[in-house]
Length: 107
Image (cartoon, rainbow, N blue to C red):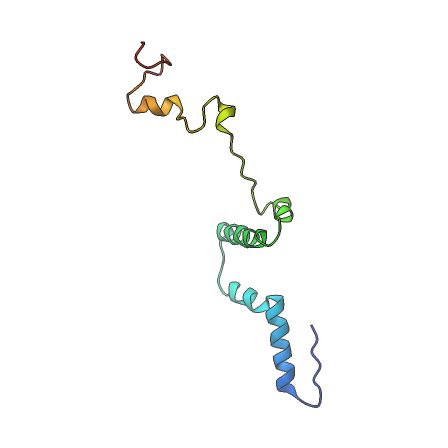
C-alpha cells in the first residue's frame, strides 16, 4: 500500500492512509488478532460473515467454499404424512395410541 506525501502535507497523507486501511479492513483484522480466537469461534465468525454476504448475493460462492450449509428438509408428503400431521411415535409418547396398532381405538 502506498501513499504519496504532496507538498510536505503529512496530515493529509495520514488521512488518506487511514481511509485506505479502513476500506481494506486492516483495522478490523488488527482488532480481531489482539487475542486468541478458538477454531470453533473462527468457524462461527466465518459463517456469520458469509451469511451477511449472502444477503447481498445468492451465496453460491460461500456454499462452494463450505462456509454456508444448504438446508434440506423433507416434505411431509415424502414421509407419508399429511401436511401438519404429527408422526405416530410422537402421539404414542403421549399415551393416546399404541405403536403396534396404527388405527386408534381398534386394538
